[in-house]
Amino acid sequence: MQRFGEKLRFLRTQRGMTVRDLAEALGYVNSGHISQLENGKREPTAKLVMKVAQLFNVSADHLLRDDLEVDTGVG
View 1 (spheres, rainbow, N blue to C red):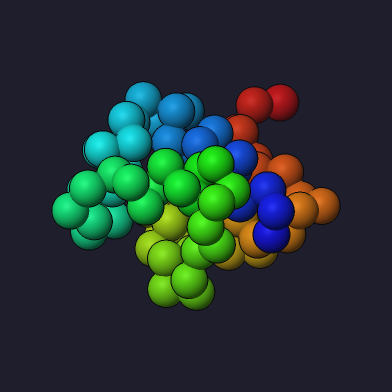
View 2 (cartoon, helix red, strand yellow):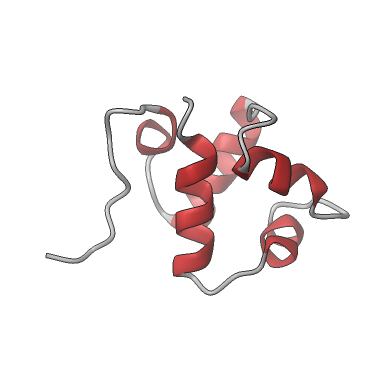
């Protein structure tokens, strides 16, 4: 799960979202929590993982397992 933040940042930027946009989409008042997740300073809750998976239409496995890459749809 060490790469969750990296994958979150990738998905967010791929969609052209700012940290603030993502925070709002996930129900956060400010973007500090999202920044901490992306920088590996905080671990996600199961509820947050499920929200992110649904928002970006990816599986929770792809977000949590370090040995899986996020499918970019290219190729």
